[in-house]
Length: 187
Image 1 (cartoon, helix red, strand yellow):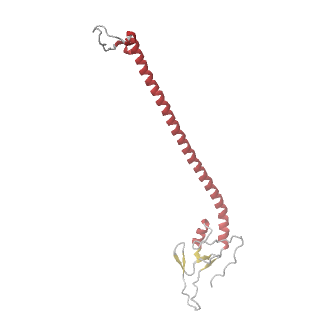
Image 2 (cartoon, rainbow, N blue to C red):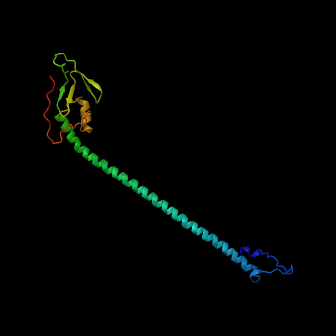
Image 3 (tube, rainbow, N blue to C red):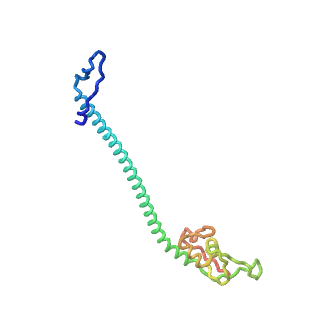
C-alpha cells in the first residue's frame, strides 16, 4: 500500500517506559493506516460522484431550457411565416380587387375650378401623396367616396397597397359592393 512505509507515532502514556509505546487498537499500525487510506479514498470518490450528479443535473436543466427556447423561437417563426403567407394570399386576392377598384375610378384632365361665382380660375389643388401641385391639364383621379383629388400615378400606386384614401382613410370601394355614382368631372 501507499502508506505502508510510514509509521504512526503514538504518544506515550504516562507511566510507560520510553521504549514501549502504547498502540491503540491492539498495536496494529498497519491496519490503521489502511483504514485511513481507504476512508480518504472513498471520501474523494463519493465527493466526485455527488459533484458529477450535480453537474449532470445542471447540464440537463440547461439543455432542457435551451431546447424549450429553440422550439419556442421556431414556433414563432413558423407562425410568422404562416401569417405572411396568409397575408400574401389575401393581398393577391386584394390586388385583383384593387385593380378593379382603380379602373372604376375615372381619370380626367385637371382644370382649375373658378372662384365662387366668378369666371376667374384661381383655385389650385395639391396631391398629398407626392406633395406636388396639380397643374392644369395633368391627368388626375377624384375618389368617389370623399372627393379627394390625386395624380393618377400617385393614387394608382397608393391603391395597390391600400384600400383607403390617403387623406381621410375613407374606403375607396363601398362596403356593400356597389360602386357609388361617378362624380361629374369639373368643367
